[in-house]
Image (cartoon, rainbow, N blue to C red; front, side, top):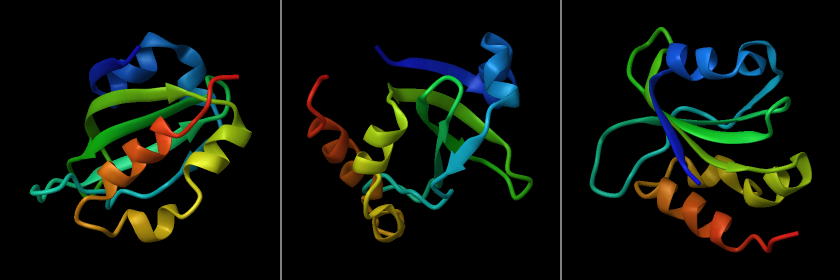
Length: 106
């Protein structure tokens, strides 16, 4: 199930573990095919949430926060293998979604 929040403040307020969790950042240069919007992808250790948010400003703030999946660290490493190249592609988010579909349920 996918959950969405208007901004990072609302995302953090919905679960206090998010604010204090260690985070693995996968960059803020992800693109949707045909769009110039920049998106950020990150994973939170305490909640195991892989999330996506629209990178709106140079200060690092984000809106349109969406949890893509809840995954243990090993699965995140598998899904994100090759992310450095994919995030620079014009359709990098399509790459990410395709990788997530390849995950097999535990």
